[in-house]
Image (cartoon, rainbow, N blue to C red; front, side, top):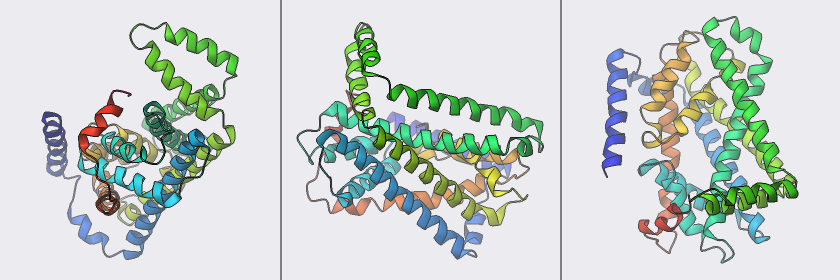
Length: 328
């Protein structure tokens, strides 16, 4: 409860600061209704993103049990997670709740694998985001740097993150002999060795299916492409300075990465401040207001997860997530 209060206080403080600064204008919400096609497009793309993310997680889960899981069932579980991620403190809370329900699908699922499947799902989503951002930064490097020298460090960070993704994907496909040697070394680490080794085994179990991992990464790139387009759709009518569409792929993903860090509920406040700064590099000084439009649509879609939760039949208790928390 103390953490929840502190997170909301922190988010509220940022919102208050941005409003006083004049960069967060809630009046823009009413103006957005003058562009119904943009709202509808953003809503459709973010909904599509949720469905595709559910499919990616479905493929990860099926690695363990070698049988098909009904897609609609996974969509419901994922939407329950999205709902609780928006209404409860901490970005992993919703994931833990959906794992409690996922455990009912098959007795073959163990706690370590289920937690690893969610972690891998998030990592592959992040890898897709970074890959997309890195590629656009490479192809548009000269044009973006020409706008302002201050943008150069931002783009160089993109390259560094892309290099990290390449290293990570390569490590998933390590030969089994190398994996076994690393497992033996990991097990010798005091206190955490056994736990880390168990997690690595599950990661490499998923990595054995190279086609699935490659497909999941491709899905992630497409998901993040639609995510950026969704942001651009709802925000572009209110740009105070023209930004070519290809340029937004080089900095909006950085904002999404920052929002994913569980500092505040659903990125409230933090996301507003981050996008205020990022758009500022391109002489657009209402970035907080632009993110606010995207944020409201995203939260609205997440809240629809209440319906699969309410009609799920079996009700689990929040305290049941404790068994998964000890696995993280």
